[in-house]
Length: 402
Ligand code: ACO
Image (cartoon, rainbow, N blue to C red; front, side, top):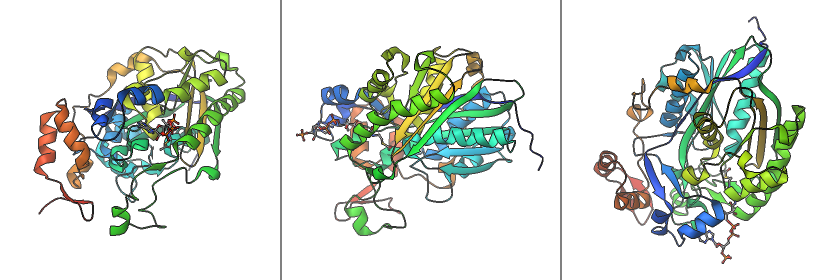
């Protein structure tokens, strides 16, 4: 293979997808002992999105990814590599990226997943940049996608209030023009935090058993305070390292796109860098923590809402399970108006992941609240009802009746 190294690697397209169903803090008050006031003041979250019964991580990823390709002005087969960052894949195997390739109708790309939890989008960005810089690939689709609401214990107030579903994507492309794109980066991994955020069962160390299901070991567990301490210690220092590598100062940065976990954490990053909160893009109030999807969704929203212009210096920065952290300092080069080329989400996928393997619908506890809520599209709820999830209180498993 002849490797043609580009002059620069730039973001050429961006996109995001968030499911229609909205879960408010008031909804959560009906599920656990919490309050809208507690959630807002401790986290800044007002509502989050919940994937519908026929959505999967791959289907959301495909919609965000397809949008990014259309904004880039590329054909789907111009993409040589698809990387999906996720901790909630459709299956342990195959990789969710493989399903995305099929869903968008790409016939050419290599596709694989990357696991770095909430830092996944930033990790995947740096991997894609390196592949393109080496001359190996020219257009890489990077997607962060999560369907966390199917991995949450909706009786655990420590976790279920925090997370939501969605997907964010960029296309990174080789460019023959000098400058622009990533100027500095930093990635860290701290195994001392390995069991601070985890899903205990379902992997090779603790395969699924009736006992693991009964004890809720397939749900996400988190040591909130330790994670908070790690995040406030690490986010600013990781961002700073990437900024220094770019040869910039924090005050040179036009906009930070931090991982949207908690507005207090974002405020502490601003404080740590000596910057006003206005330099931080914040949308955690509307999506909660969408883990690997969060930075991608925030970036797409920042561009589409006019917060980013050509020549701006941007920092993407995230932390997450592992513990991991990552930051990319980049110069924005794409015309924000290209968002007008985005393919609408209403256009069907070439092959919807849920069509060739039915999705397990919304968790029953959550479905009941969403139904009472009344602002979910009735067709989707009807679909969930006809699949009539049966909850067996003995085993706490869910089965679709024959
Ligand atoms: N509603 C009401 N009370 C609550 C809730 C709730 N939802 N959750 C906890 N509490 C209670 C606790 O039980 C505790 O009560 P106590 O004092 O009687 O023991 C009290 O509120 C304070 O609890 P803390 O845990 O100290 O609350 P804190 O201010 O630290 O906020 C939070 C908790 C929001 C989880 C915070 O620690 C946090 O944001 N941590 C970081 C989490 C995160 O960002 N994870 C992202 C990475 S995830 C990934 O990679 C997948």
